[in-house]
Length: 113
Length: 109
Image (cartoon, rainbow over all chains, first blue to last red; front, top):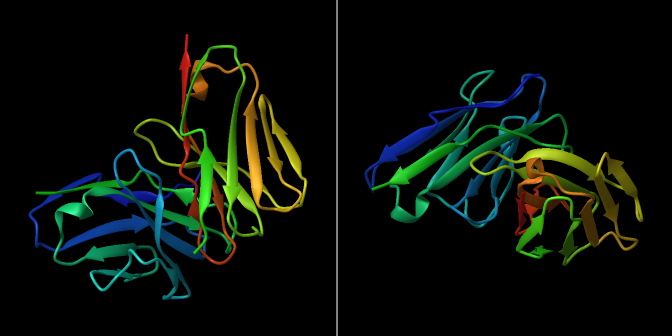
């Protein structure tokens, strides 16, 4: 069964540095998403992406964050000038269409020191 | 903005007992989805409900969507240790999924 893949599985970064989290969505899916889950808390929506542009973003997704689809397969989340509170699990997801079931990757655990 | 609340936050049951989690939205939902997240894992889609009053079953799991499309429930009959995890409801009134706070289920053998 096709799956969403995320790399790296764990990223450790010094505060203030930039990180790029990578995702390869399922190939025939058209909608892509990033979510964040702070340890022990619920999954929080960050951003959705369709047709090479952001279609929706949450209040969390401020100027510190950006997304990009640099080629036909990758979908990236960039976090600039990381803060301690950015430490969380970041999940990428994709779906065939809007409001359809989303398939999640295994996540990237981001640890900011 | 939209809020999706779930109760209870935690539930411990003996293996074989039933379990129910409830989901309430502050706004009407076009559909509601349920996900399960095992400890250390990622959310996995379980089911989507679309119609008012809809009831769907998956083996021991029964999902229900309220008549007003603002609440939903998940009921597990005769829990097993494999049911352990956090169950999230998620509602998309628009183009984003808003996840509920989740119910963490522990099944004691």
